[in-house]
View (cartoon, rainbow, N blue to C red):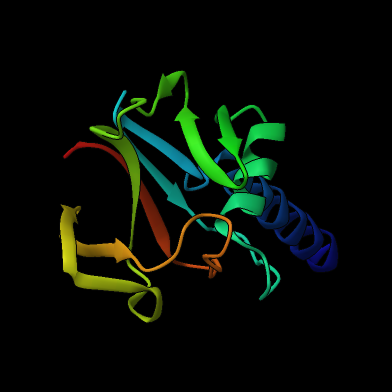
Length: 139
């Protein structure tokens, strides 16, 4: 009888844990702060050679964002296009200190400092655990 009670307890515990895991909300990969401010979180394991551009293609395929590009340069994000005279464009900021330069510009988000990316989306390698901010800026 004790074995049956232990078995029931173990099975109940397993089902409870599975239910709790299933109910947990994963960290979103794309957070829309506004029409001009998007945060991309690289929450999953990625190949060392994947670029932000390639990662964004997977997000687009999943329906999380839309974008257009010309020769690898992002020209619009979720329907907002760069200005033809380059007075307003999408810029990338990142928490990845190896690929950012704080002297080129800073953005604060959730208590972290993001530096301006040293590369465009087609060259910027993404890293698991890092975040990338797309900010529509005026010059």
